[in-house]
Length: 216
Image 1: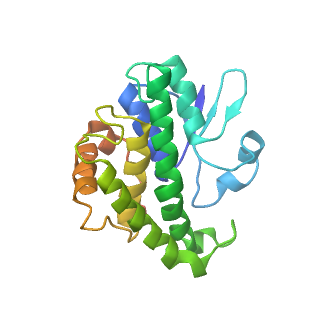
Image 2: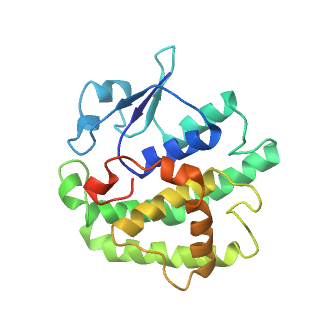
């Protein structure tokens, strides 16, 4: 196998996932800052142009973050970051999708159309007129989550899962580009500190994060 890796919150989340499981995979770095992921030969492997991507021994390439994690959990089930039973896996996937649809996608799209506009203007359609609303939606839904995690150590109760990794990677990145957690979200802030204290959080940070001034 080979992991195509880069700077960015989703690649960082995958490095964090692998660190939690103590998985080591040969890595090929891709320069997203210079759009290496938007041209051949990379897009011949992963037409979506996203990172990370996992190339299997048979040449197949898995190009979506959670799909990569699902595959790795199948072959490296311990410690479980999705679940060990159908019920646990369903609960984790439920929270994964809630986090993505209600928080992280708004956070990333707001960044792309605002602070990241110079980087993305020739790559995707930007929505500058929607930035304020997207950033406000992130905060609205963090307040929603703040109420739902009352009494919980992690997003899915007592189990540390991919839902925690996805949200942590997004919020740490967001804080570095002006989207900080609202001070009223005390439970979310406390949860963030717990995740931040895990060894995988620091270990997953890209070596160029200081240079770029962003957490990815």
